[in-house]
Length: 110
Length: 110
DNA sequence: GTCCCTCATCGCAATTCCACGATGGACGTC
DNA sequence: GACGTCCATCGTGGAATTGCGATGAGGGAC
Image (cartoon, rainbow over all chains, first blue to last red; front, side):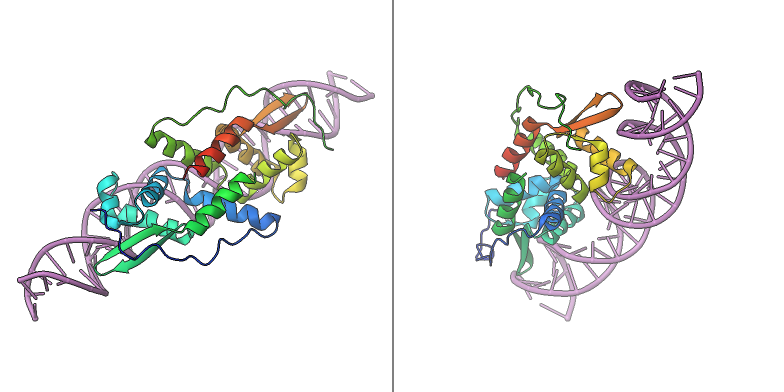
């Protein structure tokens, strides 16, 4: 069940740096909002643990409907924390390490 | 304007440690939600910078109504990131270092 | 006492979030 | 081709956020 195809270990371009004050606040707020729900934290953790994950795996692990999980994945993707690549009939999601690092840096800078 | 009375530098009890997996997720989600808005990030940063701050100072710094800022402060307080103490007619807010440390640790542990 | 200043709280409207079932597109398998 | 699996999206309710002005409690100054 732990499929780890060549979908995920990508060379992310760069962990971009925060710009000025207000923009850093806004960026941190957006990233924080992305993980401001227990289900999304759980998803992120699962994706980190096994490097990449099929949606069906997440549906098995979490007590939520498939559509709900898909929605949470969308939010994580829009925040840039996660990437999804179509792998035949399935979709493989994986974390975007650069964005996660940026989040950690922004929080550490508080 | 930078008032720093004896209100704030308190000896916070302890930075409590996360418990099991699901509870850590929930706690991280709650803290993340507290900073999931640019205004709250800005407030937190201001409180860190000058150690403690009167509400009026925040109203001067931020482009928001007094009632809105008071509301954001309430959310930060409920998350435990901030503490408010009445100082005569005013109220002095300051960060709760233990909770901030916990947030940093939880994010770093992703 | 009477003002005035500071701030928390109370509606209220507009928006967004959260969860779900249902639908449908894309892709293998046969 | 027909069928089944996997998943994204739509539509819909209910709840929570976000912003504001208005109100009022609490304390100093006089």
